[in-house]
Length: 171
Image (cartoon, rainbow, N blue to C red; front, side, top):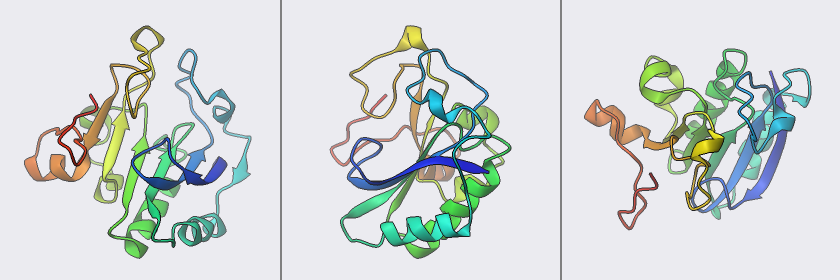
């Protein structure tokens, strides 16, 4: 498994100040993807235990609200094991901080039996669709994508969309 980059202080991928990692490799190749440089599985840097330690260290500040995992495709079969390991270790260190994951896979179709759901707080699912592009959306790029509250969905045993502290849904 490989990753493209780590952002130490990210304010655009989830609420608050976050650490973000962009996994390398994606087979969806969505037209006008905002990260085409992450599609090739052979590029980027090797994802190792040292990478996880770096992220844990970067998130140690009380200013950091959580971890955002994007891509590429972090939940592709070549990446999901490493992504799950990262999320699990992150939550063990920082149970009060949130883990957000962006994926082209669908939560209720492709992810229902995946271990990653134990550690993710929010999943933004669905492929980017150029015809559905909407620059007004806060955490996704096209109207077909959903911002899902994983914890509430697990409790309710049905899909629950994410709402911020003011009760605003981003879908």
